[in-house]
Length: 99
Image (cartoon, rainbow, N blue to C red; front, side, top):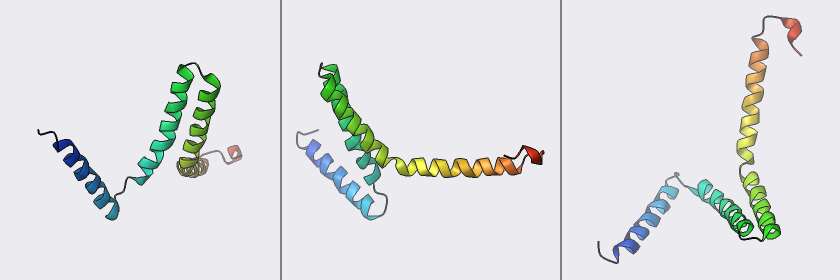
């Protein structure tokens, strides 16, 4: 490979991601998760380098951002759990055991 091939492959990759985004197969959600994960990793690095207060604060901020982005998944999981619990209550043999 020539030395300029790395940049060419990078440009091809970015162009492919743009086309996939236009077709509806975007990776925006995953890239949105990348920033909070990098913030958490920055906090861990600061923690390991001895600056525990700053590292803890940075990691906590990253965790809160990540929880905010993943809240949609938590709502879906709670809704599915409620449906499954309701279906299991309907399937019980003893009607007095319901609640």
